[in-house]
Image 1 (cartoon, rainbow, N blue to C red):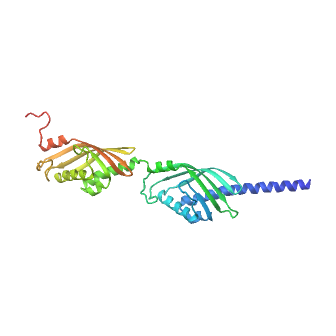
Image 2: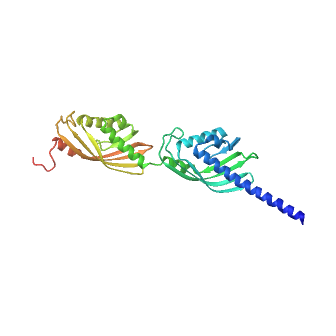
Amino acid sequence: MKSFFVLLSVLFAFSVSQSLAQGNLETKVREFFAAVDAGHFDAAEAYLSPDVKVYLPFSPEAMNRDAYKGLGMAMKAGFPDIKHQILECAETGSSIGFKAWFSGTNNGSLMGNPATNNKVSLPFVAFFKFDNAGKIVEINTQFDQTAFNNQLAAANPMANKQIAVSTLEALNSRNLDAVTANFAADATFHGWGPQPLRVDGYRKAMSELLNAFPDSKFTALDVTAEGSKVVVRHQFEGTHTGAAFQGVPATQRRVTIPATVIYEYKDGKATNLWLNADFLGLLVQLGAVPAPGASK
């Protein structure tokens, strides 16, 4: 009977030690990601074996510890509010598998790419293997890379809205270099003439307008953004005291013209613009043409 109780005690102690060991792996995983999220990469590195191998969807070969640490630092720079949330764990011996959630806002440069200011949030699963010293010797992480890229590069309506407003502000500062910096090199401008214009044609048309109306001002009245497009309803005001406009010498007249521009953005640059402006009203106010319905 005494032998039975000794055996029972040994089995109980073994099961308790196994339970503690299993809980210890989860604790280490959580501490590791807490250090990563806080940007404490030396502390995070202490959990890794010098010979750790890291497998990720976008890496054709296993990454070593230095490369993995560099990736973590790059991700923290790109996503300052980065967070790894562990949802569920399962441990077996020296290994642990878990489901988790990654989230962060791309407010910083990521791998040399400018910030998109987009929020990225997606699940991932991972497998960690530990050695006898309690160091991580293998990391295998799987996630939907396409979903990550799509969220990262998705159109950001609020950021595009800010760019559209800054374009009007640059026009008011008469800084066409700053204006055209907001456009893609192959941007197409519709509505500024009978045929679509490219950046050079747009710049020429706007130079003519600004030179003809030295005190010109563009005032945004309504700005609406959705998806990749921004709609700006604005008003142009100015006095024709400068160069000739559309062949009409300076008239000293003040004009007020309503207009609407639709911008289409990709990667923070306007690729297409559509203008709807009252050009006839402009010429009427200048006295270049009679008002519609006016007696001859």
